[in-house]
Image 1: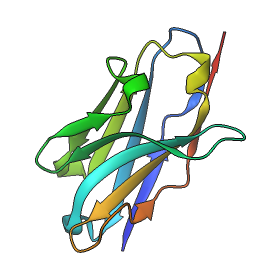
Image 2 (image 1 turned 135 degrees about the horizontal axis):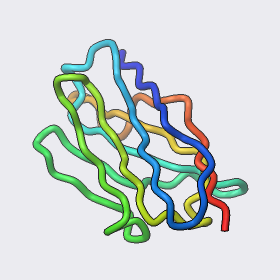
Image 3 (image 1 turned 90 degrees about the horizontal axis):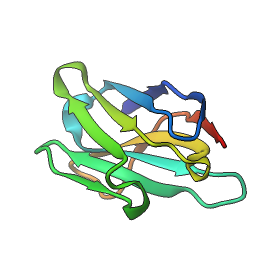
Length: 118
């Protein structure tokens, strides 16, 4: 079992920045990929970014150049630095972890609200 916990959400204005953090506990040595998802009101949850333990990253096109995902292996943590925020970035953001012996995203945080006002 892996238990991710997010922090860092809040309310900001267009163009502002926010940093989300996720700290995992439990069987963290099994984690091979870490990511962020978001869910806006009335919409399906969508993938935002991922980072693998080898350091490779990938991003949703709409956040490329604005969001940066990074990891801190020593702290079993990963972050999402969000810059130039837009109202359409408003959502509940979830961190997620995937383990080596399973496919997909296996463990989820509880979510943190990000609200961007114009």
